[in-house]
Image (cartoon, rainbow, N blue to C red; front, side):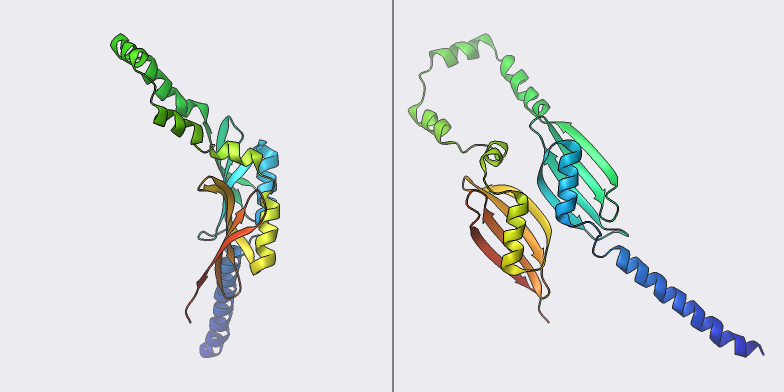
Length: 208
């Protein structure tokens, strides 16, 4: 009699275990929020511009790791990829990172100041200062292509979905760098943030 009950109970345990494993895998898979929705929510909530966003599937739930800046504050944000809930938030003052340099310059000795005043300006150094490319924030304010438009350009070209996107500069040119997961491989797409032209596409094909 006992042996008759063992087989059904064993089957029931296996079914529950398989179902639980499936739920765990599904929870760490594709999030309910798209990368565009996560970016829009973060920018609206903190009145800042996303400089980098990445989807993390390594944990029990999908998460978006987002970096934002608004000229004064830098935000490091982690969002739940399914609910949009803020899991972790770190704020830092952008201007405060410049204060130590100002303090050090203010503490220069009188002799150093006299030497600086008496020294003649170097034409080469002046030229370097004039040709220095603008910082990332200044360049981002001048771009004509939004992150959403760059994502659409990339997905229309190679298909798949964007897993990571970032605004950056290459040789002084503002660009969007995007990583996409397609059905067969991964693709890295670099898009000119001023014209919308695709600069490069690199495929990372998985060997069978």
